[in-house]
Length: 243
Length: 224
Image (cartoon, chains in turn green, cyan):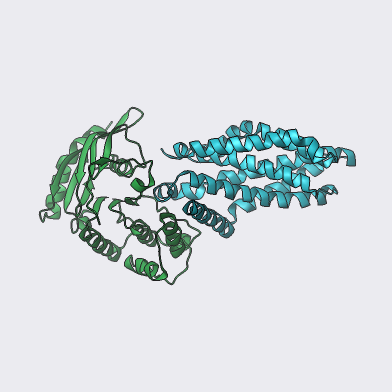
């Protein structure tokens, strides 16, 4: 897999008069798992959507391997695997049908064996043709993760990926993230499940006042140390958010 | 080209399977169409001559109103679970999403028309099985689906989508409504198809222009 280097350069995003991202700079390298921290409303989801090309930044640009990403081309959009708040799944289709559908769109050759292996990888039973509407939230989240991994993206953007997962599911996700990182993918995840992400993140980035307040490595931080550092950096945003 | 056709086929398959399993859209459209035909039948006690004059108008009004219920729901699967984003990441060309939705909506309109015509014939005791009428209604369904798919893709992103869709769509459909009703009335009155070629040409030109514009602007409409 060629090495990817994802950069956000002076990215700003406004919704009307509200400035969510303000001249934000962020650089991510292959093999990094960066956990993006920030209070509710800090702009974490907006940043992920801008990076994936789903939102146009008001100013600034996204670069991959040194060149600006042109999201009007499908090749640029297909570099990203996304797990967001919504599942992106079709409720009337079964899990395997959803994956086959997306595989066809991505023009990925998904054999029956590969499909079953992918479902087992996320802890789902590949022989159950149950429609997704009958899945629990955790099962939907596992299938969502499988869908994101389907096209073997170079960059994984995960918005609260532990949502709905039980303890076993969280551990499984951590194993998956470690495997994907070992393959040189860039992983950027937002979460408030600090105890789980602490096990897999190589770096932490704190988003405050529309910018990355600090990007620091996970030097075997303790949970208490991480929480304390995060609260220190995020405090000004909370104070500003109060009426 | 081959990949584009495959993508469209996959997207249409997904829409049809979703609808076949839930039957949300078809049930609502079919119920509305049957009830409307009943109401028209009882509200207007028409003599045979008046029935023949009004048949085209009643049928097209019922198809358009029932079709709006379907259009309102045609993007809800994508909107409810955010799958629009996933489609945008996956498809090679965003206009293929429009093509697929247009084809699905067109097929649903044809299916609705095939249900409405025999029910109307039964209720009003009027034979309507004419190939020329079929051609007019097919052209009408094309124009309706072309404009309706584009407007539905805009309104689905708004809070008042159920209200906005007909408000924006119906003025845009004026040429289609006029041409379909005029041409269908003439055909049912026994006028030769060649003599209504003006209305048919209007329909074809409208359909080609609307489909082309929709393909050109669809990507801008669904992004952000």
